Length: 94
Ligand SMILES: [Zn+2]
Image (cartoon, rainbow, N blue to C red):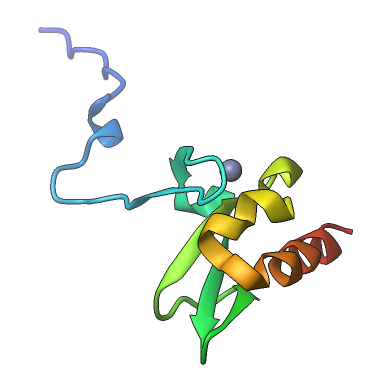
């Protein structure tokens, strides 16, 4: 008898029990994997760009889409701090 040739597994794409949290950008509402976002968290009422460790509640913005960093698109989420958040995002990009 001949051994069957190994068949590439397609099961890896859908692992039961392993959830990948999907986030959506607060500016354009696009859903993407979490790794493609910049994360902002609010601490003591101040929104700050967070890199690295994750804690608390956060908002997400497309990491590669400067259009999503425009102040007018941030107003809905960040209100009066939209300008500061926009400036922080733009400063980060350079
Ligand atoms: Zn976006």
